[in-house]
Amino acid sequence: MYSKLEKVPDAVVEDYLTLLTDLDLTALPENPRERQKAMALAITAGRHGEAAAAQAQVDAAKLVAGASGSGAAEAEVPEASLAAVNFPAKAFYLLAAVGICASSSEARRAIQGGGVKLDGDKLADPNREFSGPEELAGKVLQLGKKTFRRLVG
Figure 1 (tube, rainbow, N blue to C red):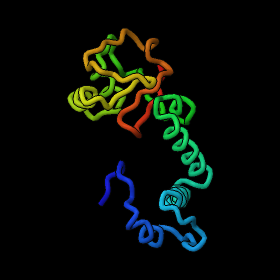
Figure 2 (cartoon, rainbow, N blue to C red):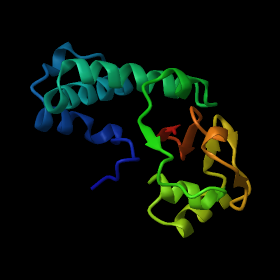
Figure 3 (cartoon, rainbow, N blue to C red):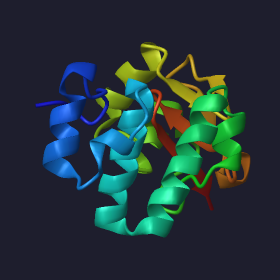
Figure 4 (tube, rainbow, N blue to C red):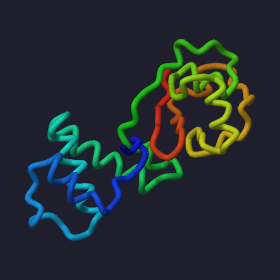
């Protein structure tokens, strides 16, 4: 099947709409992206409720529109506690300690691959050291394009 990071291919959107929703296909927009958004909204609403689905759609639009980090700062970003982090902490350890990566080695690879940002600025050095939680509190840690965590003390 598809991983959570892959988009549903245009060719199967109609099948997914039919199988996963009760939406009237004739009432949906012709644009495949808009149809995918309608499908995502319907599926999320069915699982988490209308309010949560609407908020998720707003947050996703903000994140996509402001991929540089500004959108992430405005959107509802899940929090990650710094309480379990032993400071001073290197960047690779931080990602594992707050749970954004499964292990320190995965975090090191993500940083070296250019896939990690802190408040919109790329983290280039996995050995960058942070002295304490006050240096990180309130900042948004990003892994890839879709994983965001607001760091809290």
